[in-house]
Image 1 (tube, protein in one colour):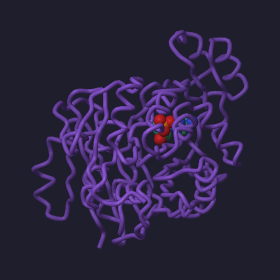
Image 2 (tube, protein in one colour; image 1 turned 180 degrees about the vertical axis):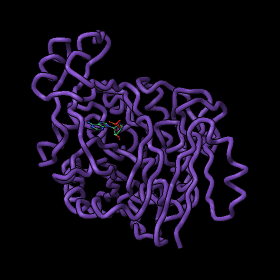
Image 3 (spheres, protein in one colour; image 1 turned 30 degrees about the horizontal axis):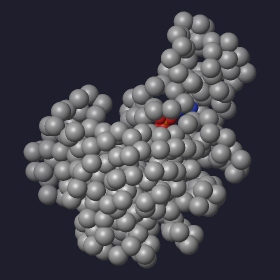
Image 4 (cartoon, protein in one colour; image 1 turned 120 degrees about the vertical axis):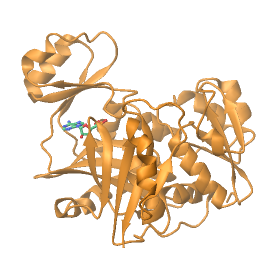
Length: 352
Ligand code: AMP
């Protein structure tokens, strides 16, 4: 058990680390952020900050030596250099979870082996591979980078087989996925302790715009609620297989044939931001509790319902209007530059 007063190391400098650090502070912990960028919005609310590259083993080791436990908020950290962290402090969730989740091929293979069902997919390393994949799986489909994609970046829609011919595939390893006809999208967010206790938050119904999460609503539509148990069982198998400690997210499409696995994130998730006000214990607090070996807090709903809207790009300029309604809970992440498609904050409303 890592008692309050100790220092939690956070790899990654974004809003997830920021909200994690705020939750940790409420429990009396200090946080130490580690990120490559000079201006980190997580570091703004942490007691200490190391600016370093994710593959700088000496800097990672020096950072970990100052922490009682290390976690991450960003899944594109290379797993191998994290051995330098583990030599000095426990790393939760395990590096294996990063390895699996940061490559769409290993992620889908791992989940399939545990009985999960993703969209039909094929690894694509050449134009020939892509043509063969489109011939086998069909179009429409989506070509995605295997690594480093987020918020709809690194994705190309293939509407018809001929669309594949014009693409330049030289850049990076890719994956082709058949397009899923879904009725709705949802996420399963769980927290798991080292002893194997697992708790789930209510599943939010998620609506994306241009590949970016726009709104999460709890409770989700009946079509989702009918599929949550199956999705939860899969998420629990994933967490158990990884010996997972902390918060884990799996995203699903609710289809006429049941839940189709989309992707997993070995971390707290945007579709769980509603838990800050909408659950008895937030995803951020329970993540801190789990990695520090504290008892978990209740994940039960704190209201009849919750709606969380992301503030993307220029939406953030609307903060005066948002605050003019006293029922709105406004969260701004402190990002200096507003850019189109950039997550600047979110606003949560409870249905009481
Ligand atoms: P991803 O980054 O893979 O989560 O994709 C972002 C969003 O694009 C998803 O939440 C879906 O709305 C959409 N999307 C991704 N893959 C597929 C697919 N195979 N079929 C249908 N929609 C998809």
